[in-house]
Amino acid sequence: MKTYEEWQRLAAEITIPNQAYINGQFVSALSGETFDCVNPSTETVLAKVSSTDSADVDVAVEAAGKAFKSGVWSKMAPRDRKNIMLKWADLLAQHQDEFAVLDTLDMGKSISEMVDIDIPDSIDCIRWTAEGIDKLYGEIAPTNGQNLALISHEPIGVVAAITPWNYPLMMATWKIAPALAAGNSVILKPSEKSPLSVLRLAELATQAGMPDGVFNVLPGFGHTAGKALALHHDVQVLAFTGSTRVAGMLMEYSGQSNLKRVWIEAGGKSPCLVFDDYKDIVKAAQGAAAAIFTNQGEVCIACSRLYVQSSIKDAFMVELIKASKAYVPGDPLNPATNMGPLVDKNQMDTMAKFINSAQQDGATLLLGGLPEYQEGKGFFVNPTIFADAKNQMKFVREEIFGPVLAVSTFDTEEEGVALANDSKYGLGASIWTSDLSRAHRVSRQLESGMVWVNTWGDGDTTVPFGGVKASGNGRDKSLHAMEKYTELKNVWIRL
Ligand code: NAD
Image (cartoon, rainbow, N blue to C red):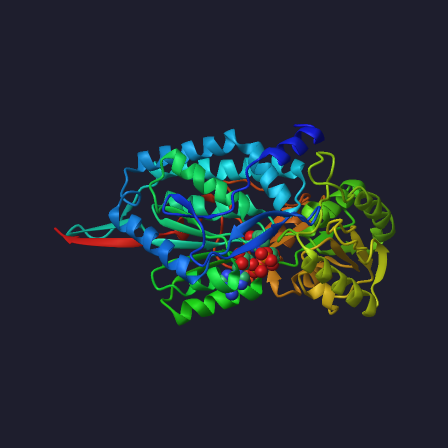
């Protein structure tokens, strides 16, 4: 790991990409418009980035469609496609420090988290998915002997990926790697709050040998570039990660246009259940704190609802407060920092709004509280914990997407499960128990796409990621992600 000074030096030296990437080259938006990309630690403008809109979307979709139809990528020998993607992953690995700095400057994530999580995960996602390209076969159905039925997985066409700002590089690779591996052309619209790293990633794709038009990046706003992509008749798949509110809009856009497939990874309000049989209270408390304060709470699977079994509440809360105080906001370029700033002032205001509502609803503030904002000094906030939370309180029901934890208690396992399931969301859940049967029993009952037992947030490219209920459909990662970007085709032959 580099030192603080070394990261600062690199941050001062790197070239910040600021144009859209269409058909194998950097271009400005046709309108000439730009938007400011702001460093949330200092509130200084990092770059004026091309603000694409529907005119640029038309150009990119045409280029992507043309590349798809030509077969340069969609019909390339699988082994060759694999080798280009593996080279792409190697280039990302070669430039990993630059990518780490880009996301840290852009959205405030700590550099150590970039180095430990986002970068290795993104490289592995591209590499692992690429390796699958020439190892997936079609099927022959067991029909009767007079017929032969062949089933193959075909690429679909132009895939638009629309991604959020909280893990800019990682969320993008989870979509673009399987979509490209399957042979599609891809247009990525990153969040307007963190567009930088994926622009550089597009440049590396060309360097790795990916043909022009196959991977394009359109920085811009949701209501302009994003909406135009979602309504476009020549986009066949929309792969989205972001809020549940916008996910609903995308489904409507699909209905209003060409019924394009809409894959959704949306919001969450994940529960953490701590049972009194769990042997190590300190470990459980550290786990519960990490589950809400990692990445400043800007994590879709953040366990923002904590339910502790009543009999251990007092002892547990002492440890929870201790563990939470270890999260100290600071310059995210410092490898010792474990909590950077929130992404922008809006996010800070949202946090303040929910803290006020928690207090009005009668929850008890135990740690942190309203952010103290000083203009020009960054959007730094403290870990905040409320006890005596009730499921009907607004701050317990709605996603805050910041470091605010709601704690309440339960007496029985049945009550704990009922409280955990009492949410419109169903993304992740974490349970802490030393009872193996209870671990299985509770995991089965939780209405959640993912359950972590005696841990939180762990994952691997081999394991699917995604939620149920208002948290989404389909899955990122693993071979299941490839299914999202392929169409099944049958050929029936009478012998
Ligand atoms: P967001 O929904 O505001 O924006 C996500 C993306 O959608 C951005 O690129 C944005 O520009 C675009 N967008 C906005 N309006 C649009 C429109 N009308 N048409 C087309 N595109 C539009 O979400 P965000 O604030 O960037 O990210 C935070 C949210 O993402 C949280 O709800 C979080 O839980 C969720 N998230 C989910 C997962 C998951 O895997 N389930 C992972 C990370 C983040």
